[in-house]
Length: 412
Image (cartoon, rainbow, N blue to C red; front, side):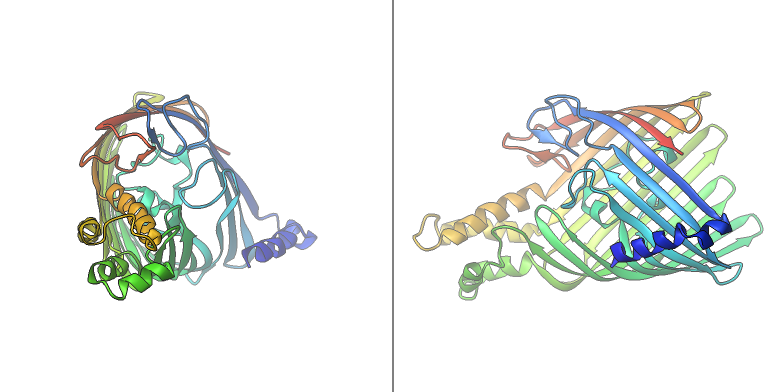
């Protein structure tokens, strides 16, 4: 549907009627980034210990916007990323924005189409590296678990108001999302909620609350295999695991709070977020926070970030799964599917329950108009024998690692 709509809209934009209006604006952004980890056996955004790689945070985006009629505008944005946390191919262009906006009056605006999901302070410019000081937004809040859900198909309505020296931005939204990751397939129907942003002088306060109703299934050998379901029907332990590792129409709550202070060459900002399953079934509860401080010295801006992230995925189901090895030993003829499911699900659950803490130091150099060069060092400390959001290979994960990133960000 979006490919057809894009073709029709581009045909209109290139038509003599549209060109005559001379009201179309073309812009873009790009980041060329290289990164490397200092420990073997780990990978993050295609970065590893073997060599410097450029297929992690490198991105190219193009945007077209213009007036279709009085108070009616169109915005399109296509983004090509070197790495994606869902099942997209490297550098495969994705239509992140395609929406119509209608300005009802001075205060109210209505939009419909493909929009950004307002999870964070920097949701609207998530891929625009030039818009923030870091090499990438802090992953303790801008977490991998939410990366594939950065946009949704639906509508929103926004109320803008200025009162004395305070501006208030209030947004309500509703829509759907569908994504497939390496391990799980998720369909969100619907996502509803809103956020409020209040600005007064150097202070910005933002709170977001979203609810989504989701169907979740594991890919590969999984509890939804018919053979496993048949076993689970007569075994309470397996039945509990089955119920815990899939959800149908379960409601999840996402909320975040952000605060930013900017004064002259100083800036301090921080965000916290929380995800929780409010129903039964697949339960991935995540919590994260960071605080970032920076000071500009002419063209140079050094910065320091401290953050933490906790992910809890069905801990009780993991204990029950381990207990099944005593009641149903591995290697029983005819139960090979059970062994495959236990091995895969056990590994998945073990790696999905973790805590990580991060320290990040970096410097941004605005050496030319609309160009910024950044160098960043991020140390990640892990616990419980896991590797946090850094994916392990076949080796046992270390207790910590350092990710070094150099990026060149550009807007045009």
